[in-house]
Image 1 (cartoon, helix red, strand yellow):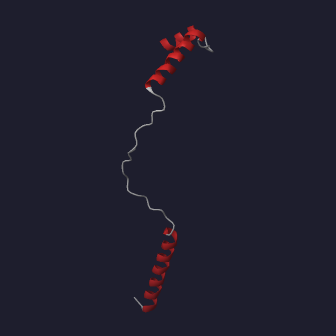
Image 2 (cartoon, rainbow, N blue to C red):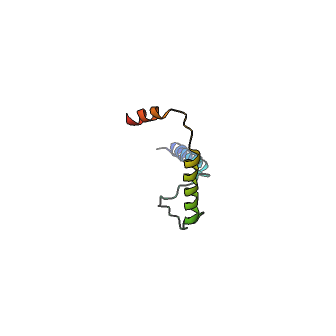
Image 3 (cartoon, one colour):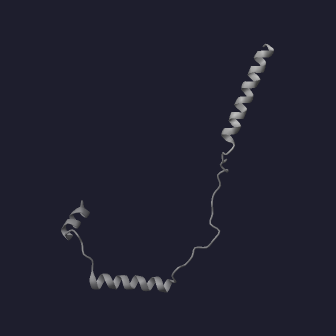
Length: 82
């Protein structure tokens, strides 16, 4: 290979390296995968007694007021059976 051809190939290689350096300058490299664990215990917003009280009140509301359905019970039964 002639000195001129060698010089051009070296220039081209340096140009590619500079271009690659510009493209990868701001790239964030991904860290290796690892299993994530929560070191904290779950927060208990309500005590067991408070949760039980809410449940009992909700049952009372359903018993006393009920719920209004947009469809007839026979339609629900028919869809449930099929």
